[in-house]
Image (cartoon, rainbow, N blue to C red; front, side, top):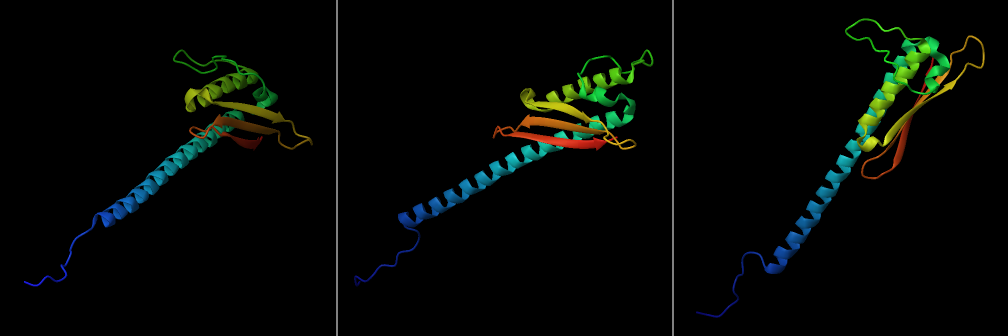
Length: 157
């Protein structure tokens, strides 16, 4: 037999290492994409909560139009919620304080660790026969990044 060139088939160790490095870099990219997607979903969920809670208080204000500036005041548990016994009688200001109390509890319970708070600012109408303006603001700390975010809703009633 003659001693000619041998045909080598298959992968060499260097080729195998290069393929593994390329695969590892690709997997790291996929993992990073997954993490970014999870963070984006968490941020979107927080914003959805903020919009929903601000709309909830706006509906409460619309239902109690005569309370006026009371919604910018302090929150208090006035037990203005009807129970099994019957109706509860509260003034519009008491109802506003009770609404704020219950709403602020919802805001604090929505974000873990109570990192959120809500506030209402009242701006009376500057001209007769124009609506009053309520600015409902919710502020929270974003999980993971720790960024301070807020959402404000202006309601004219």
